[in-house]
Image 1 (tube, rainbow, N blue to C red):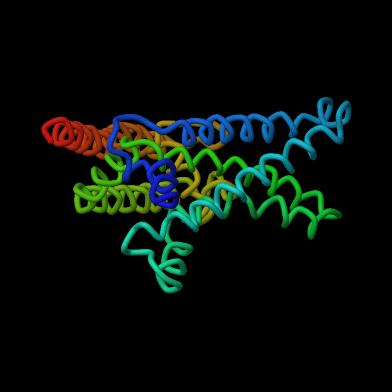
Image 2: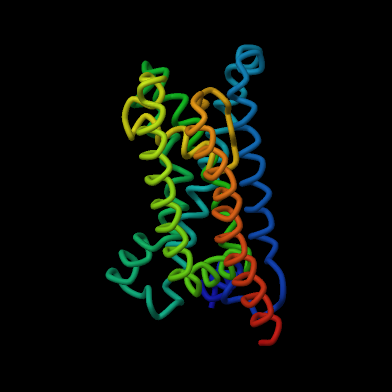
Length: 250
């Protein structure tokens, strides 16, 4: 019975009442605090003033998350899918269990890369992945996954159209601009950077066509970029609307 109560406290899907349990609310607060600490630690002035504070806080967070992970591994046996040794192994390699593990691993990997500044920075940012753990406690994440799954065909189609537009515009600019700007448009891969910036309507302006024909193709590409962005946006908006309406109707 104790394990059953613990499972109801830790697993949102096993809870009969609406809302999160007290334990899961505390876990959410710890995730936000740990992420905020990881952000502040990247500021050298703060890190130099209190070098031991951030390490102590990270050790505390990892200890709490490790205890939570162990309790989840113990309590998940209440779910018929994860009973026994094989069930526990299946749970360990499930999506949310792997996300939980990623929240802990950077702390221990940091000791192995203590003398590598790049890896240390990377591991500090990896701790921001802890925010993904909040998805376990939100029905919106499941609605997002269901919406993406229901419109996967349309999204893949829009991605294919985007790829063709990128390739076509890159080829066109390579043909008309390569002679005038070989550094920027001397090959299709080089022209691809300009196509990406233009079709996504970012428009950095670091590379621009100079010839009249190149400017004509650039204008057509920019107009096509508006439709390129609108296509998946409309698909996702309709999918989210349908999914949330379905959930309200249940």
